[in-house]
Amino acid sequence: MKAYKVIKSNIHRKGLCATRNIKKGKRIIEYRGKKITHKQADEDTRYGYDITYLFTLDKKYLLDGDFEFNKARLINHSCNPNCEVLDKSKSKIWITAIRNIKKNEELSYDYGFSFDCNYKDHICKCGSKNCVGFIVREGSRWRLKKQNNI
Ligand SMILES: C[S@@+](CC[C@H](N)C(=O)[O-])C[C@H]1O[C@@H](n2cnc3c(N)ncnc32)[C@H](O)[C@@H]1O
Ligand SMILES: [Zn+2]
Image 1 (spheres, rainbow, N blue to C red):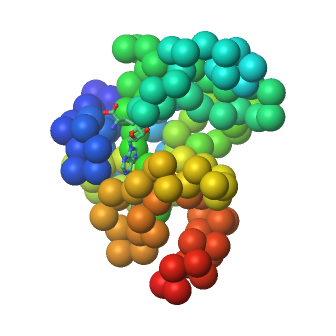
Image 2 (cartoon, rainbow, N blue to C red):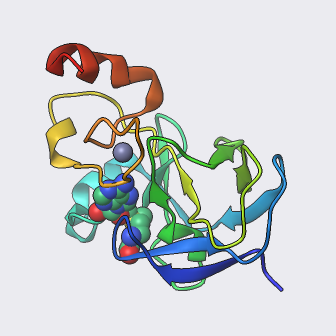
């Protein structure tokens, strides 16, 4: 049995949750898609929608993960995630547990969005105690806290 299943998420539409207890460090699911360049993404209107299944690999490439076979595309962002993405620049990308995860817990990772003038376009509904209200990578959240005096 797979360690994850598709659920109706409390965060946003669909998500994935654990089907059993998962130990810290365990690889859970591979993020699979089609490698494209940032230039291709910018030029193709199909990639311009609100819900994004684009996964940044590096400065040049993204993975278009919008394929039914790629269940990892359904994992939502959290400000207090239980997973991380390892080896982004390698050919295989694994979503891995960063702590012990309980059966039925929703899987999440930090989307890693940078803090820029568009951060307000990505409201975060992760519901964590430490949620900063927007989908912004951990390393940049202090900027939001400072700005909002949180
Ligand atoms: C890759 S999809 C995740 C799967 C999505 N829930 C679905 O059903 O298709 C990414 C999109 O999910 C939504 N999303 C993910 N995490 C979120 C969060 N913490 N708060 C609000 N929306 C979120 C945003 O619309 C984002 O563009
Ligand atoms: Zn949040």
